[in-house]
Amino acid sequence: MTAFREIALKAKAWPFEEARKLLARLQRGPAAGAPDKGYLLFETGYGPSGLPHIGTFGEVARTTMVRHAFRVLTRDAVKTRLLCFSDDMDGMRKIPDNVPNHDMLAPFMGKPLSQVPDPFGTHESFAHHNNAMLRDFLDRYGFEYEFVSSTEQYRSGAFDDALKNVLRNYQAIMDIMLPTLRKERAATYSPVLPISAKSGIVLQVPVEVVDAEGACGGAHRWLLVVGRGGRAGLSTTLGALAGDRPLVVGRRTCRATRGSWEVPSAGSPPPRPAPVQGWWGHHRRRS
Image (cartoon, rainbow, N blue to C red; front, side, top):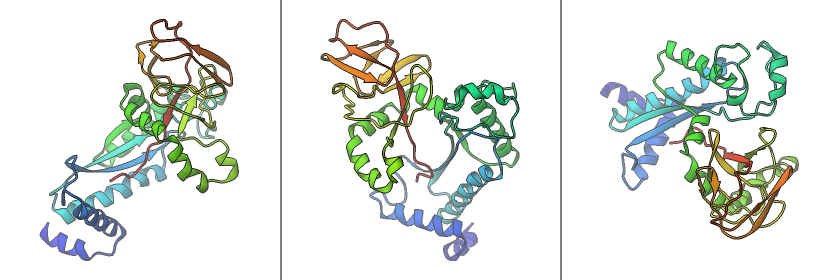
């Protein structure tokens, strides 16, 4: 490995150039040589909106190349992990030409891919089918990775804290993002994507006056709730939910485009509402 490291230190190939940048970044950190979490995280992501292909393969291959170069440079002194993240809560925007049963898929346009039926009839959903296909593809070529499903992460509550943090800093995020977007995109941009409780469709809508800690803030505001399977889990704008029933403070009215929910004081919750669920976009290739 020593001989390889000497070559790696001077190599001009792209994976080694990127690996040297990562190493330099680590050496500048407070715990020079190792992240606080004890490992360097590499991540690659894809959306299972269609069958995996050579481009999907390339996403994992390129990240693996940088990871290997980093391991050579560090002689494995720093532990590494590679996550392959599936954005399987993305809404289905179009039906791929190379899948059967288009008529069966048509009613599910815009719904999360993990809720779209599998047109091949072999898996729980279209997303599950494509995830399994990708994993088989990667396994046959001997990739070392950990597979992570967006749907599973959100349902488990793993992202609850991050969601709340996004909402706490909502305006600061918007102030950074909006100047980078075209006018049409800026009109509907939000770091949180709500799901309609009535249609189940992932909506591209603006969110206004979001309070992550417990107040709705008046009429014409989106009610955003992080969903956990069939149960409402964490309310990111109206406060915590205990099981299926909301525990909120004050008397507010939140209206989405399809109806309203008048929120009573804590201690006398209404029957379980039909919440609008939501999630935020994750960042890929994190180090």
